[in-house]
Length: 261
Ligand code: MLT
Image 1 (tube, rainbow, N blue to C red):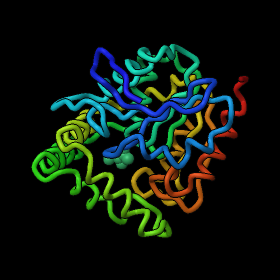
Image 2: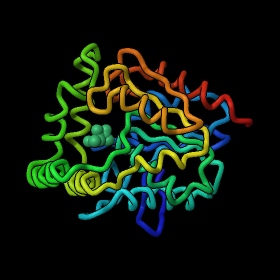
Image 3: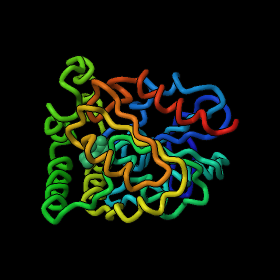
């Protein structure tokens, strides 16, 4: 679906009926990463998965921040009349957007789902590396990001054909938007202090073989978020929703089961 907002026209998937479950994808990919999981989400939930600013079919900006990404998500939610009681989830960069959203839109959020993500800011070196990636992406396209993720994005047991399919999807992302997101990640805030402020039920999911945001990091986040649960997905790397969709959906469904319809 496509919707007009004050921040431009956004594309999103809107499936099912009931309470809103909003899912935010990672970098540099698009809403299609939720397609294997969405059909498995329990009845009574409306799954809304937008393309984040700059990626997929959403508007592209030469410059944006993580806060802009969060604002765009809420602009979409406003435009479709989804105001509150939102279960907000995100994978990796999507999770980083969730931290920002929690700081500014907590009154609209009933629960969080943090999937293979990390709360730290970049170091000076990390920021410089993100800016350098952005420059290369502008020049040569996001395939260089896909190539840099080879051997790290997926569990070794994830079938090669599936891995290649997702590397191709990464390579096909808009280069200006992907570069802007790389810079936004470089400039992101430190969200460690935010974790102690999270007072809604939170599910942390991580692949047992995630080499980018490893299980130990997820355990640290779990220790810092009071009402959190941790689900470790077997035989998954950084992309459990595409590597192990059934196990990921099971974890999400068990978590959603605590909310009345
Ligand atoms: C993601 O999946 O969003 C990326 O791995 C984020 C990152 O590059 O840190």
